[in-house]
Length: 445
Ligand code: 4AD
Ligand code: MG
Image (cartoon, rainbow, N blue to C red; front, side, top):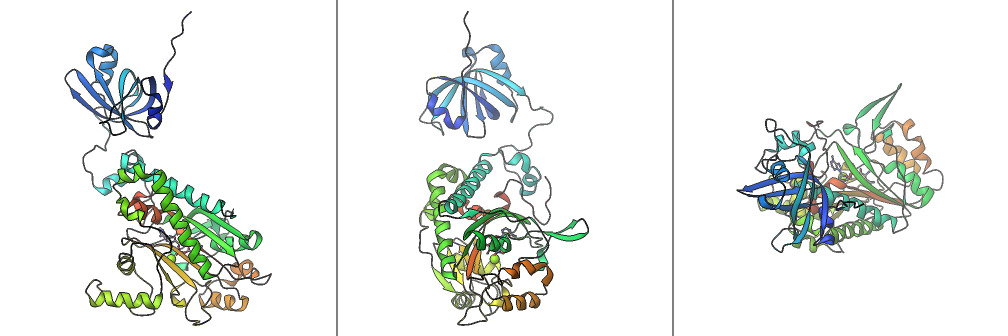
């Protein structure tokens, strides 16, 4: 008895391992070019794309007819022989021998996203389909690489991953951007940052980090703001502001190098100017807030900024864009006025009106990707700040406990994953950095 073996199932990314052999790939029809008795379908399977070659006289009539006129994004299982071709984008083509169409997309209700240009609103409304486009898929792979790199960085350096709660009783980053949630008979909020909780786990485990979703009811419609975003946050017992800055530049450099090593092809698909990323290395330039103000005022004098920046204010998006475009490496700005920063930051002992904090601005005008600080160690001062900020003391009782039972200097930072993806991918807007972005006016799909 003879058995017909069906060819090895593989992915397009792995197809080079099967040169000269018959394989099966399972995916979708991305595009189809027809020229008389020759069909050139392009298949995609999530791992990549490959062009098939289908001469009418080389395949069965069923196979030829199944492919002829086949609609974009119809699902297909394709058998064929792998052939090396130097001109092919991936280095290989498929001599198709058999095609099984699982579901044919209707001609009267065709796939809405064609290779032609579409407006952003249309694409956002079809985000569930848009992510199939090569560029969007490449962005999502870069995002996954950045997340993996961040976790590897901390895992390999003795940090313990500790997950903070998402439902919280109080604010971490100001009360104006809280998302309220009905929590039975209590008022709860979606977390703005895991920081307060990982300060507690840092006192238990020394070096910790969290990685999770965070929420801010941001009313701003900028290219940098989402209402739901992911943050990686390390927190270290006994760390000073200098330690926090060193850890920040270490993390960013590690992530960029990892992406260059593993995601170069995806970065090229996205259209990233890779030479700019190759310039990223330690140390990063460090300036204090006073120096930043001076540079902003010079920028205004030169006409590069619309508004004159006055000492004492927080940096706005145009200010960050201006400053970060002046450097080829990420810029660390430290010691902002305490008044414009969060309640939990340690004051600078030299100038108590300043906070021991740092913002890291990505180059090329991308602005803040990291915010961090040394945390306030004194129980008395922290309690005073909680009152000054109008925060409910009762909800912070546990947090104050950390200053009663073996308080130590400590610090950490948060890096927004989407901001990092936007910069590393060279993207104009954070909406493309996450599979399903949530913004002021978008909750669908
Ligand atoms: O500077 P932020 O507000 O700092 C904190 O939340 C601290 N508790 C973190 C810490 O020290 N553990 O936010 C940190 C980072 C920002 O630098 C930015 O990258 C990102 O989170 N981020 C946002 N990303 C997208 N959309 C928003 N609305 C964001 N708000 C902050
Ligand atoms: Mg910040």
